[in-house]
Amino acid sequence: MALTNYLELEEVRAALGVNDTELKNSVLNLPVYEIGLVRELSKISASLPVAFSTSSAVPGVSRTPVQQALVDATHLFSVYACARQVGVSLAAMAPKDIGDGKASMSRFSDAPYKDVMTRVEAMYTAARNSLMESMILYSGAGVQTKSTVPRTVFMASSRSYDPVTGT
Image (cartoon, rainbow, N blue to C red):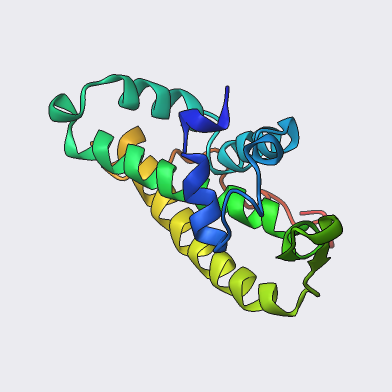
């Protein structure tokens, strides 16, 4: 599985407010980000990657509203889950200034990225909740087909004699 099955690399950069000079494709294509996204998707539902693949394989005009909602929610969540993971090291990774003279480069402290990461975290949470709702609808767990009556397994019973008096 590649990240590009779920998102475009430019979308991650846009969510973080950086460009391709500051955050290169070679960094975003590292296996650690792919592994992180797969784990995040699996935390929501073990069957989510298969449900997404199945739904996204259907042509857009033929998708049901539930399938389209799942595809859209997975796509949005993937962008912010990846941005959240990349953002951890972004302050140390992204350059502040890049100059021509003697290959100069300076880096930011983490201060400008704190606000960005706060916003990314808020979007991640909202996208995660939306994806969970979409997955529930997709799996049919949100639709109750019949009511079930719980079975009684144990019942209380009284003794037929008094243990104190023995009668």
